[in-house]
Length: 199
Picture 1: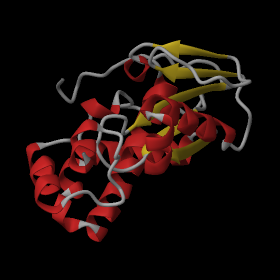
Picture 2: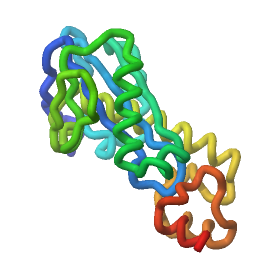
Picture 3: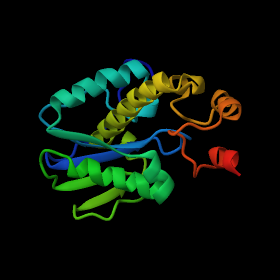
Picture 4: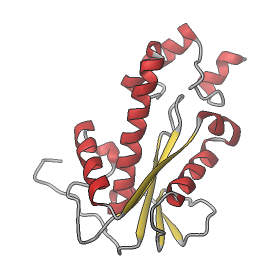
């Protein structure tokens, strides 16, 4: 995509809340979810799936989202909760916490993907919603930027794993570090590459 091209995303009504997560796949760190309610009168240019943006663009947009959104909240499910519940249920829990943490109640909640948590809000799942709906794209950006910041802090605590480079994903560098140093408390012991170390 060239800088002059833009993606037109559905804005939706004022009471619409978009929800997305970051960190389902990594071997370490929490899973984060964000809930965002945008103001149709204060559009944010450049919103799209966070994975399709550079790190600098994500950070810039995250600042704009916090400034212009009607309400927003980022929540997490911990490594312990991921191992206890499984990653799907932990992700749904983080989503519930994010929506519950909003400063105003939404009228509708649209969730990226094909499944919504079991909650009281009127909601629908939107497959590839982070590239279709502005509020979901905004949520994907907040979830990703907050989780990346968290992983950089974990890197300072556990530098041998290279968390700042791969954000906990199972890269060759990460797998080599796991083999050399074993797991730290921030590794998900229910995930196969980590679990194998304890068998």
